[in-house]
Length: 402
Ligand SMILES: [Zn+2]
Image (cartoon, rainbow, N blue to C red):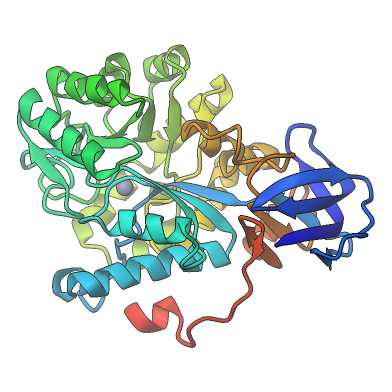
């Protein structure tokens, strides 16, 4: 099915300008962009956007689709794997409905994310693209152990086994937990957990397969260690000057998940145990300070929210990237072009150009002037298909939270 989309105000993030164009979508791709295209073909369906704004679909590059915070009904402990799987998929589809067309999943129980990835790819359901790390890899007893199906390893041999298993099962990247974090009790966020030989083992095997390693690392020592070993993206990250220099030198990406320490309302009302609230608040200033340094220095920063549901937190993260000091256009890039680059697909995703995948959102206002318009898309197109089906009568919150 081919579609002609007329009267688009196409937002160009590189030039920071808009242009009135028409798009022809064919086989899920943007076949042609021109000033005006007349529909002389009978095999083309036409949509008139009436000068609404069009920009690339959003990415969330740090998510766990089956996670649940808050979890007042204790579902993570009690639901069956089929129930968990359905909830994770519902979260991803809800995300798409709000304009999040691609996800990078950095740790997920079982093969839930792979199952959804496959069926979304085959268009069995309309859902976001998925790039997944499958199961994250923690040090024995370290950050994230016992949650979201993470591997617990000690030593490079066990690291290799975990990495190889992930690769064999179809992981698109490898996620390792280098330092302590918010969610695990009895550890400091600055604690280094994985050792050089363990990180090197993960990087070597991943590179052999052409995959990148992404590191959960709050602690500055852990960040430096991970970067020196060849890790490609730092998740969370309290960055000092040396970290920022290393990020630039290694051309690494920063996924600050800034909403996790800056959005006071969410932190205080999240229903999280007190030790997590205390940890998040204890690094509020240093996290922001490091973020500002990285942004000023020109480190590539990508939008990753880390909390479900995607339909709320991806937008919350973009909002906080801007509050933390990013310009509007850089905030938009952090949710579009930079994630595509991080995932190695910048020649087909993250932009609206000929031969790119037709993933885009239609907005009431110009997002270069008004970031808020992005949070309420009028239409969402995934692979050129307009997402407008009504599905389900109960909301995610009604089913799982309220
Ligand atoms: Zn995470």
